[in-house]
Image (cartoon, rainbow, N blue to C red; front, side):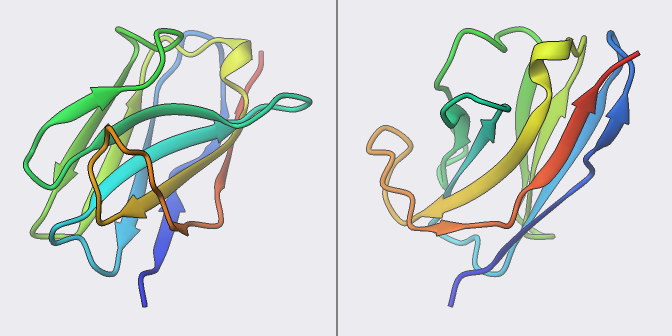
Length: 119
């Protein structure tokens, strides 16, 4: 059974950086997506790392500030977040699919990690 565990969240000042990690029990042939839920808002899809090594951005709201990377040997997918702003506050989730990033058919989810951007 697929399991995903996010880590790396915390409190950071505006303009700061965080790197979130998603440890995946089965990473082979899986696409991994990153999502977030801000207080009072719907879940937002951020981006995806495909099993073929391609990356897809799902939103322009974090373009140029967030980067996804993948370490297959250690079964981890990272979300590097730079130039953080207050609106980046929320719970961040990673999710897995056997399909493509384009299809967005994610069927396994982590428990989430809290990111709070505040001075």
